[in-house]
Each structure stands twice: as structure tokens, then as C-alpha cells.
Image 1 (tube, rainbow, N blue to C red):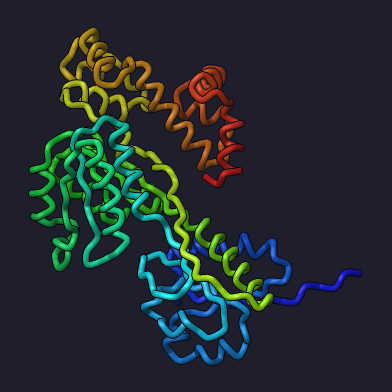
Image 2 (image 1 turned 90 degrees about the vertical axis):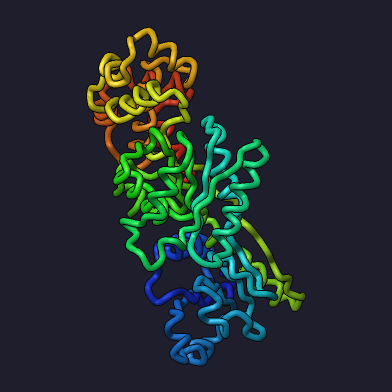
Length: 394
């Protein structure tokens, strides 16, 4: 019988009430820990540290510490002698001398700019978080750099103007949105900020996504799925950050056991792709009539809307609308409607366990037509798409 591995005690310091971002990090930590039969995990809340509970926790004699709480809140946890520590630095606080895993925030902003560029926007804007927040500055910098490389000059709004005033009715936001050239792609460094921008646009009668296309950050389902139109967003790879932090801590613990010097690890995790929902589902269309027709089809393709009705809304005859769609979107109105239905089908495949027949019905197609269209567009069947996304966790 082989000897059992010596237990490794891992102390996780988190906030007292785990925010959804930290919760995803801990999913990644647990995923790594499941493959470590000798890991014994204890959770220490930052509030306990603030109330003097750190000494009690250290009597447990942890072999390593994973910091998920903000280090500025519990600085005494960051540099504890002789205990390997890895910080998941969600707020880019960057304390010196400690191994840290973070999200590549510049790449998040760059990804947002690339998304608008790919969708033919000639006007883009960025809305930043209040105060001197490093993650916001980095996302803005990535967005601006990428836009400038494509000869675009981003507009900018500092959300600190919202402070001290009702977010649901702020004159500065109204003025900024009204004065922006249209159509325009607006990137917000947080989903909560994007929610405010969309709310102001609704009250001003600015069409989303017809005139402004909005992308947020965090992919917070409580926000993205509850507002109308549903919000496109860039997910932070938080589960990957948690897994990688645990992985790096394991390496440091092993180095310590071998009496080797411990390196200070600095690692940034690349972001995921934009999760596209209705708030950014239209490409930039300078022709207002074609934009109106596309917006109508976007809103009514899943409600028995017709091309004839779209042409009527836009004040165009069928032939003129066909030419306009080909010129500005590269597809026919019929193909555009199919794209809307396909995007909806992909969402249902990713986020539900509905049967294929139910998904086809939700997309106003027969099951046979749905399967044929899906395979023609993606080169895989709907079932294969669902399996692939579940494996990837996307």
C-alpha cells in the first residue's frame, strides 16, 4: 500500500459576503483542488482579519494562502513570513513582492474595440469607471490604442459625473449621448455602467442598437439578461484566474518543500470573446432607412416579422431595401433574418437544455430546416455545438 500524501493546508482569504466576481474565482480554485487529494481548504473572511482573527487562523499552520479579497483591505495578509501566497488581483492593486494573477484588462478594452471595428463602426466611444481605478484605466487604454491603430478617434465620458446625482436621470449623460455622432459603438468598462447608458438612451429616444451599440464588461447575468435590449458583454476569465492561482500556489509550496527560492510570479489571463446579445447586434449602418429596416428585423424576426413590413417601416420599396442591405451589410434581408434566428438558437443551445424541436419552434422554423441552416452556417450540427460549448464552459 502506497503511503498517503502529506496534507497541504490552504487558507483562502475572501470578502465576508462573496461578490459574484470572487465567487467565480473560487469555482476555479475548487476545480484545481478537486484534483489535489491532499489539499485541505479553509476560508477566512476579510472581516475576520479586520477584527483581529488573523492570529487564530495562523495557528492552523497553513502551507499556502490564496488571496481573493482586496489586499488594500487586509494588507497584513499579503506578506506573511514563510507562507507562500498568491493574490488574485481583480482590482489591479499590484502590491509589490507578492505573486499575483490578474485579468489582462488592456486586452479586454482592445477586444471591445476590435469588435466594433469588425462591425464597421467609424465612430466609437468609451465610458470609464469613477475615481482612480486601475482596471478602468487599463481597459480604456487598450480600447483607445486599438481604435487609434485603425484611425478612429474615440469619444470619452467619465462616469464620475454620475456621482452625487441620480443615475437614472443625469443631464450630463443626456447631453453627451445626444451630442455623439450616430451610429456609434460604445464600450463601458462595467456592465452596471452600460446599464445606465442604455437607460438614458431609452429616455432620450435613442435606439439601441440602431443608433448606439453598447458592450459592457463582466458578463453579469443579473444585468445582461434583465435589461432590454439584453446587454452584450466581455466576460472576465475569473474561473481561469482562480484555477491558475491555485496551480501557481501549488508550485510555490513544492519549491518551498524542496528548499528552493520562491519566485514572484506575475501572470495575466487573456479575456474571453464578446458575448453578443441584442445591445450590439447591429452593425454600423450610416443609411438611416436601412438601419431602421435592420432594427425592425432584429426586433421582429422571432415574432413573425416580414421583409415587406420592414420595408414599410423604413419607407423603402423591396428592391431598394435589398440593394441597401447588400451594400451596408453584405447580405440580403432574408439572410439577415436567418442570422438573427441563428444567434438566438446559439444562445438557447448554450444556456438551456431545451430539445432541438423546441429551439427550432422558438426560431420559427421546422426542425429539419433548423438543422440544415445551422449546419450550413457553422459546419457542425446543433447537438455538436451544444456539446462543444459545454466542454469549453462557454
